[in-house]
Every structure is written in C-alpha cells, then in structure tokens.
Length: 87
Image (cartoon, rainbow, N blue to C red; front, side, top):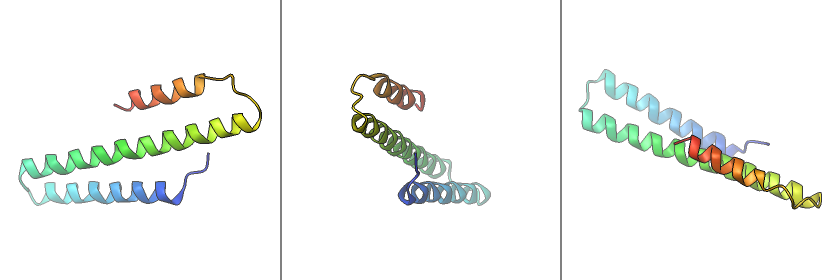
C-alpha cells in the first residue's frame, strides 16, 4: 500500500500536538489542559488509524475485484480486528 501525503501530514500534525504537550509539561501547565490535549491527540491518532485501515481495505478489495476474486471475506474481518485492536 502506498501512504498518501494526506496521511503523512495528518501524522505530522499529531507529532506537533505531542511536542506542544511536552512543552506544556515543561511549563508546568494545569493538569486539566494537558489531559485535554492528550485526549485530542488520541482522537487524532484514532482517526489516522481509521483512514489508513480504511484506505488499505478499499485498495485490497478493489484489487481483488479487478482480479475477479469476490470470495475473500477475511479482508473485512482483518480490517475490523485492526480497528478493534487499536482501541
């Protein structure tokens, strides 16, 4: 699978969020604000996982359909397991 620039940019934004949280810790900011930012980062990571798994699933299904193979339902099951595992 090829990872798109959008996916990479999404992860760079998350990286920036994490750096910001580290800065907040160094500045001894309020716990509530730190936890809020951590929660936002976790949500962004969850969305990134969804985009990557969904894009990969779509790519694999299209590839199978182009090859005339409609029998493999394990792909969907595997994608769902990846999403569940990420939580």
